[in-house]
Length: 65
Image (cartoon, rainbow, N blue to C red; front, side, top):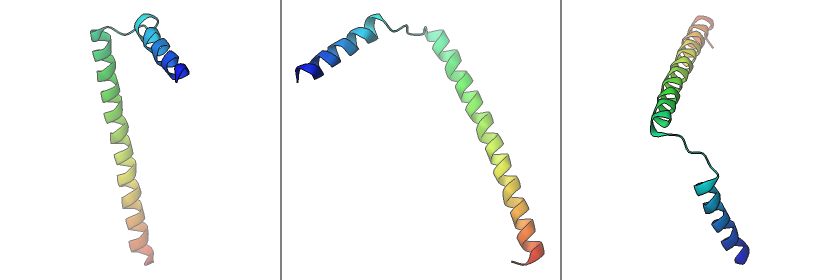
C-alpha cells in the first residue's frame, strides 16, 4: 500500500512541477488543427468507401454474380 501511495504522490508532484502545460491559445489552435485534420481524413475515407461501393456494385451488376 505504501508503494501505491508513494507512486500517486510522486505522480501528482511531477504533473504540477515538471510537466509544461500549453497556454490556452496554444491548446485552442492545436484543437482546431486536430478537428480540421480529422474532418479531412473522414472525408477522404468516405470518398474511398463510396468509390469502392460503386465499383463493386458495377462489377456485380455487369457480371451477374
